[in-house]
Length: 397
Ligand code: C5P
Image (cartoon, rainbow, N blue to C red; front, side, top):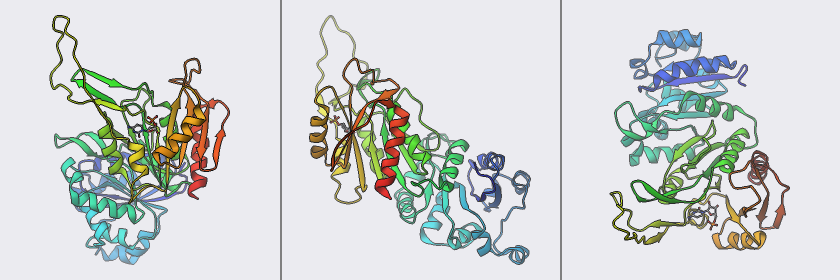
């Protein structure tokens, strides 16, 4: 809940600005007050009248409005909030922030503030993927700026990919996380989850069994402790949690690329059941049955994402956690796996037939750390997740 929390909302110029109107309502419903700042470009998309009517306050728009300077200087305005939210955060606003420009009210507030800042970027796919924007993103993350989204999907400009502004419920959850006094506040955690699908042809694939239930529960538990969570998920059956940035992938190679893009992070939890192999030459056309002749599939090895990240020379997250699904000699195999992969912790579980763990609601895990093995009693996957999240918070404290 956001009772009596003060949000300074900067609305940048982009079609996603319409969502900012709903965001104002939902923030106020939760008890927050919203002081709106509309950039000149933002005012091309939503009117000052709609914004101020929904916020129940006047809209600040111009740096050189002397009346405002008399009423409330921009320095004071920038510090009067508990959190500054920029939604939509355009490529231009991100560039200004990354380089310390202060040539309008929004950029001046962002430079003058000592309040936590949360950005919800929204822009064309190419603009988001441009090396300049990605450089600015890395700079801003290193400066301690929080992010929610962008999400992948269809864009108003007709293209498809990352660049859509996070939906209002996701922004609300990120606001709550940023304002929470949870132990992971200000921490960025990466979680992989679900299976990967490796295509054989356009209609067939190979995959591991994975519902994504445990990874989803872990991401939710981390967000509940205040972490900014990037959730990289293969095609899971369980829907992703709210309040996290969701990156959807299909294959192991896409998952590795998404993981590398999501770094740096304070911790990385690899709960995905990644396929070890892919078909070396997936067919672009459906392979036809032909008179009893069987297709011969040649396999290639997929990158090991956990190991790749664990062994990074530069930018390795300080805490890397892997999973081990075993059917026998769980502790022995998981201990060997921890050493082989170079990760800090392994959460091992027995998924042999009869345990009901695979796809079920419960899990019985053993945590393997430098200090040794620690068996946890059988409990719900949500409880495993909560306990792991607490351990992570303690390790990062
Ligand atoms: O080697 P194995 O697949 O049993 O290891 C499981 C752990 O390694 C899990 O944490 C899983 O997410 C990770 N993994 C990975 N990339 C792979 C294979 C497994 O990140 N290609």
